[in-house]
Length: 252
Length: 351
Image 1 (cartoon, rainbow over the protein chains, first blue to last red):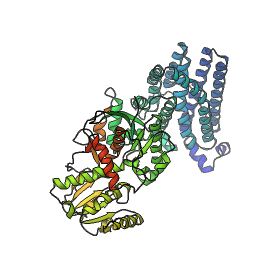
Image 2 (cartoon, rainbow over the protein chains, first blue to last red):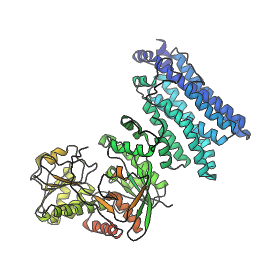
Image 3 (cartoon, chains in turn cyan, green):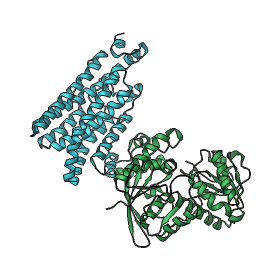
Image 4 (tube, helix red, strand yellow):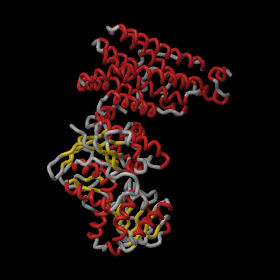
């Protein structure tokens, strides 16, 4: 009865959600960890910004991401789950390290490419899909956060388009170098057969084979994420045949 | 480099799709497992797969793009119409963004758009052609050549056109109806079938209509399949023994069948002065023994680009006349684009 009132579910739906509680726990753990990585990334970005407006933007985004993490954790609480998060978990740690390399190089553009083009593509596309199948208010939360994430990408896109206009070749080479590091990690994370199941976030076995129980698949999340990524690169003006080859070469 | 033309197409089979992805992955990466391909391909937004350079026998060169709409090979049915139209529109927008002056619609893209081509006009700057007129030209030439090779007299043939009311089928009917002994027209829509029959009557041809392949009024010895068939055996079991069959549908899915039909691929042309694809996906796109072969629909855009005639030569449904066919044939021939060598299919190729 507790679930019925918290998530606005019928008793049948409530029973199904209860049965899938371990699965939602793992999904929420990935979402909260991803948001906490974003909090750290935007906070780091604020430290290298020289323009006060940009500093304010970065700190605002960090707060926004913290709010998203809290919203996901609250959805877990409705299910009676204490949602874990671990920014030191294998893949997320690698993604954070890639971002920190750009911070060390004080490369503002590199940071935006990783956070806004790559990680947000993954987040927006995944949240949209999860939003469609997650029960009750959890679905609404995923869907709303997907929209919010999408909205704040626009400002970064303006900066990145202007940067590419200065030297398209150099810009594209930078994106490719970051693609190899970041998108390879994301692709490994979403690969169907993660042999060592080493995400270090799932509390039992790997959650990916369990996803069909709630109408999702890891290949759908991977496909939607890569589609969003390709469209974002298109919007920046990168040649489509080049980015197609990049994506085709990712691990599966 | 300017983009003179763009070709919009998609892969005919999962094998071809897997081969394209393997080529893009390059030799340093293992191919994507076959079972993963259907889970990856449908997510790829339409985009250029390769750049093409085509040479004219007159010495000029044009440059273009092959844009794959990534329509999954198993989603060609009516249930996916809206999705596929969306993909073709996205591909058209891509061609427009790339500055293509003329865009040819290949294979299923053309079938999807022939009745809705005006909906592509929102992409200002590019001209769209279905390419169907040159396809008709090559089908007709191919039939003539195969009849000659097989020692058959076209004038004594009973010709069956499957998919007769489509743009290609009706164009073929207008070109050949007066040159054969008897004409049978097959299509699913009886109303359109009757309209075509009435049109042919005006030029003195009495055609029999056959809305049901299971009940053909006569055994045809010359068949032009302008539409891909869900059940090819229905056709192949109902025709004359040893009939000549031009497989001009998309995807091409006819084999010789129980009556030993002599099947050949129709609607293909060859660029005499050659063309270059980068990366080279020709062997994946066109399983033909001769070099520099492409579908007529794609070659129409290339021929028009070589001619510097950036116009929507083929649009809509049912507008292909023998005069227009002669006109595009002449343009193509001037640049060395001719009928591809016609050869009988040796093995069954039912997809």
